[in-house]
Image (cartoon, rainbow, N blue to C red; front, side, top):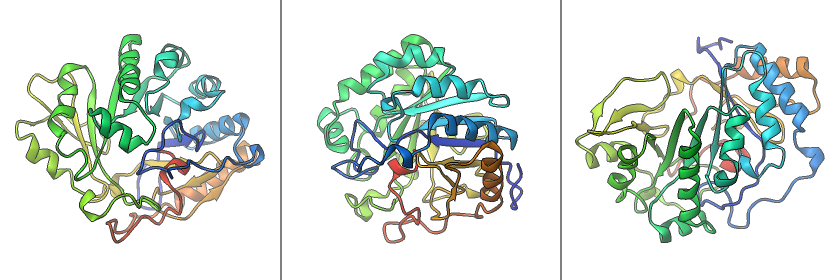
Length: 317
């Protein structure tokens, strides 16, 4: 579907849960989230209705997110049924990787084609700090599992944080030389409640270019990342700059939260409820959401925080 700014909206990110087995400081509160009543969340059937409605409007790419989607008990069924919906050409999933050693093979069999794995540091102590309760070795075991079962494409998502991991840019980038994976550096977004970080934490992707002068520009894939490659790299380096150089004019996505709200823009408070609706009702709400997608998300900075009204785990990464 084409929105009022002539953008082709063909990508849906659907959060299946706002719960997580980590507590990353830029994503959710230290004590996690209050578990909502079952009746306040989308059922599996409603999620599949939503995927069908989206596909009927021209959505071709679907990404499953959370929270951490792999803590969802019926995640394999959700993935398998979503992949079978007519019109869905690519099913992807974003995860912290902790549960991949047990689930990577089953996810691939369920139709997941691509994985994004969040990994912000290669230092054990810093990993424990940023996730509050996680262990680096578990995340790396997840990466190994994903590689072993042969996913077509694996991307490592690194949230770039000044004073935390900007001294690890070179080592993190080298993962694209050691493994056939893309490493994507993403600017820290000043979300609704990311109070652990002051203004110095918000550094632009230019920091990566300064740290890696040997980067070579490479072919682009139509996504939001500017793509480069290290000499000898098996994968690419991606730079995603939602703060310093927004890409709203090319944005092709909408989001569906686990409690059934369509968000036409990550950083907008505007939401369109689909919970309790049939497939046709969801389609009408999605049409409204797409038509009301704003031209851009407005200024983002340490002082001008996101207007989303939710933490990242409540929206979907």
